[in-house]
Image (cartoon, rainbow, N blue to C red; front, side):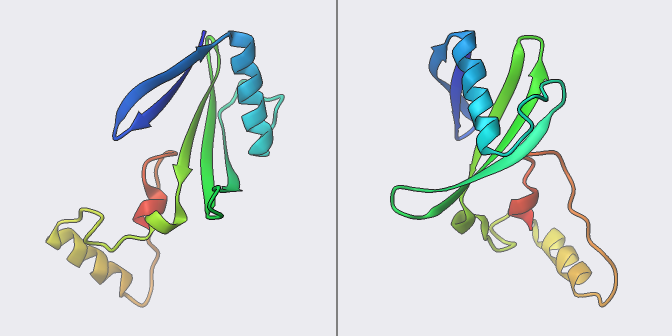
Length: 126
C-alpha cells in the first residue's frame, strides 16, 4: 500500500493509504506537473510546480522523487513566497553570528555560498 502523509510542525500524520497502482499514477502525475522525466525512476529528481491558491495567491510546491526498493518516493513541500522573507533576527542567528554574517556581506569582494540538500533551508536563509 502507498501511504500519503502530511508533516505538520515536524510530526507526520497519516492521511490515507492507496493501492500501489494508484500511488504509481499519483507520483507520475506529480512528475508531469513538475516537468520531470517520467521515464526516469532510478535516479532522484527535483522539481517545482507553480499554481495559485483559491484566493489567487501564487504558491510554489517543491518536489523531490527518489527510488526505493518499493517504487518511487515523492516528497512535496509547499513554499509560500510571502512567508519566505524573514529578517536575520527571525532566522535564529545568535547576535555574534548575525554580526559575523553582516561583516561578510558588507565586504567589497568575495562570494558567499549557501549550500545544502533539498529541504535544508537554503531559500529561507537567503
